[in-house]
Image 1 (cartoon, rainbow, N blue to C red):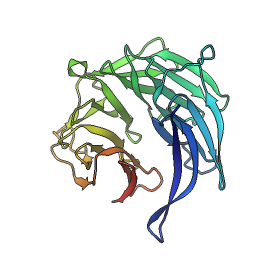
Image 2 (cartoon, helix red, strand yellow):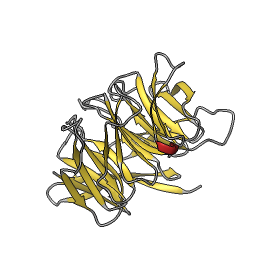
Image 3 (cartoon, rainbow, N blue to C red):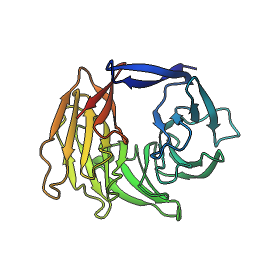
Length: 287
């Protein structure tokens, strides 16, 4: 088993440097890390990770401890790796995970029980994202489709997009300010696909500013029409979608990093900050 380490860092604004405030060992590399949604700041600081399993960690001032390990396969010592997850911001008791075994699982983290598990795609599922609601979520995967589900009627799902030649779709991001819009991107492709669930099948925009494959996308937390993308061309690009349905030709801002950008995330509480990871480094950009 490969042991990785997760570090929790805070920015010391006086020195302008990151300080490590906690760390913990993690079996296998994490595929995603996310804080529990808590805008009022009334809940304990909980962190979730995926890799071999979904784990919840309680972060306190002087230590980090594992709250629980969630495993829906009680009959085997083996598990299908989890590719990603999303924490429901409307109902923080719900976490959805995606797996290479074609399934998505919706967990109730308060009871540590699986609420439902469904075969979501024909091949591996690479990402899952909740809408800004308690019941609706979508997923993408190796079959090249974006599929939308409703927890109130899981007998049916809606295919809202299929990529040309069914190229795998790697990541999915739901616009939290305007739930009609989703963003995704194709494996080894250099553009971002913007979808409107009111007019499925065809993208409403394709953002073609990168010269090499895209690795990460994130909607701006406080805006309904801005999205950021990062890729192998070392660029983080910010796009303004307000001219839609007119074509979006160029980004409004670009940042050139020192190496390929692996992931990026926009701060929900401090909207002027965006974080990027590259090589073994974390950077935050202030707009």
